[in-house]
Length: 411
Image (cartoon, one colour):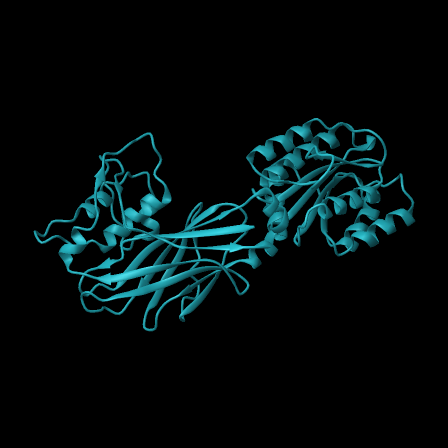
């Protein structure tokens, strides 16, 4: 069972004549091991460990495989296979049940240790590697995308063409492969035929300084199917204008693109296990004091299925009510990092904070101006940007928090 949660961090109160609503929408997916194996993508790494790989080739293959393990996202089902004239499950070290584990920081380190322990010996029978890969995928209920990344010198000396063809026939259409090779061109002809049958590409293993970019490209292309499964949809009321939608955590991405219409869809990349935060800006027609309305509804969807959704609200109140709204300033704590939500909500509070009756800036605006110069967050989402002072540290502002709806998804 997969659960998605969302919540909104915002100040819903607008002064008389106010039009712009800002909010940060945080979306998190909880995931158990069983759930990950039934929903997320699957990645298997096979390292050719035949005797012909001994020496520099084997060291290069293991280095490249470790780099690939580092790039597999948390939550993806994973296994490491040692390939010789037989195929061995090197990680996870299990003898029954699912033959794959969920990638995490712990699993990543354990897998790299298992990789370091591998030693070259024996012959080469690629068909056995493919059949074990299929069996590992079948031990879970992973649907596409299923992908196998193989590091090899290309020779296939210990099985007959009939045995290899039988393995290819069994695996074609079930998973795709990519091959990073260290062999001579004549040794790679059979590898090219295998790869053409299964789908994928044969690429010569590049120098170490180019390896990271190549692996990122291979794994990103493979993970497009994950990205296509989920998207964000933003609904706004008639007469409203969606100004932007920006991902602000864990990294910065402007998703805005085309923001016309009442229902706007945004593709989201590689959603596996993590929390993401989005900054939303909506412009509403001004309303009379005391009027309340929904400014936006943000939904995470898989196809037509709603995984979770949250509402962004707006309420027009007198300026004094906005000024007095639930604000406090805490002393700076230099040892504690400031999260994206804390920075964002500080900025959102400043957007909604009008000058006080005395003509002085409100507490929230003062807090914005006291941000550390090391933060580049204000430049991203505050228009016009607010110049931070150089002699004060970041302060914390509490902003009204509204819960989102939780939807249980049964895969």
